[in-house]
Amino acid sequence: MQVQRLSLPSYTLSPPNVSLSQQLSTKLLRLNPSSKSGFCSSLKRVSKSPTGLRTHGKFVAVTCGVAQEEDTDDGFYMRRCVVLARTAIGCTSPNPMVGCVIVKDGKVVGEGFHPKAGQPHAEVFALRDAGDLAENATAYVSLEPCNHYGRTPPCSEALIKAKVKRVVVGMVDPNPIVASRGLDRLRDAGIDVATCVEEELCKRLNEAYIHSMLTGNPFVTIRYSISVNGRFLDQLGEGAAKSGGYYSQLLQEYDAVILSPSSIMENVSIPASKEAGANQPLRIIIARNISSPIKISALTMEPTDKLMVFADKETSVELERAQTGIETVVFDQIRLSAILEYCNSQGMCSVLFDLKGNVSDFEEFLQDGIEQNLLQKIVVEVLPLWDENDVGNFPVALKDLSKKLKVENLQPKISNESVVLEGYL
Ligand code: AOF
Ligand code: ZN
Image (cartoon, rainbow, N blue to C red):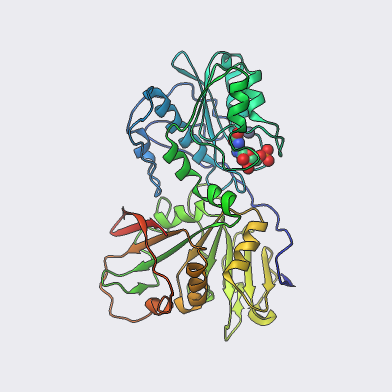
């Protein structure tokens, strides 16, 4: 274990281990499960169903909505791009998830998605898949094609070179070095360009990327469980942590998860996504004012897992045996903003603030988060329980708030016997 004393994070962790063996299985389509790249060459044709994406079975349901554009096929293929993009969920930060479909004479001739930062973009995989058939075809992309040399060359040029006739885009890229330049370049080259097709869906797909691109901070979601009588519960509902459960899916989706030391000590094992091939989030433990050191050896960790302890003293962590993948950072004063700055410096776009264990561990962080507008989303699981034990003091954490919080677009979802509420702050 390394112990570092820092005022501001300025070091690197090795990039997350990316596994793309995730299988995308919907009633609508089945991709090649052995795909390790952004290719989806096994599929050349998809059936049209306006409700197809609702069968996706993800917690963050991708609703199709009504096609707003003239050509309803545009909406259909854009939704397909979103499905493809989600194949790489939890693997692309700091890059967005992007999917691309090439269609010619009503047939899908090429498909691709962006698998990981540093690897080719979705358009490149789709164009390679289509080969010569890309000429005079329509390319659908869930995000505006880039027009710059980053880790990879511009996709706008690749589309022009492939001689596509039309490009349909889901949303403009908020990255200031792209921002509409990709669209302009395509139009200048005489390509017919349509934009904002299924825009809301595409934005929702990359809400964390958009937020981090526009603000320089990771997108932060707080999650907790309550009973039907409104008491904080230190537990999850049935099936939530299993494969397909909302909690397991959240862990797959987020780049990092902040945990309380008490949740670690009491639960012994660290939370992990159970989704097939999930790229596990960086687990961050805040060890502040703790009376006895966290005993890391009690944790069950996979060799590739990474755990970071933000502590206010070097003695906060006790290792009973050598364990790799654990780092401790000591701050004189631990603040949420410093943790988020660290995450941002590591290219993380999203952080899940998981309120389990002793909620009073988080009191100041929550207060800071709300006062400084550092929290974007809320996920609350309401369990089918009436609870009379006063285990948590959740309302106390928010007692001294100087401003009122409003939750927007609150949506319920069913998770076995629980109701999961999701909204934006
Ligand atoms: C696309 N298609 O699939 C993705 C795009 O460093 P690079 O070369 O990977 O460039 C990263 C930027 O490119 C990223 O911040 C975003 O603006 C855009 N991502 N663009 O046309 C893709 N992933
Ligand atoms: Zn690109």
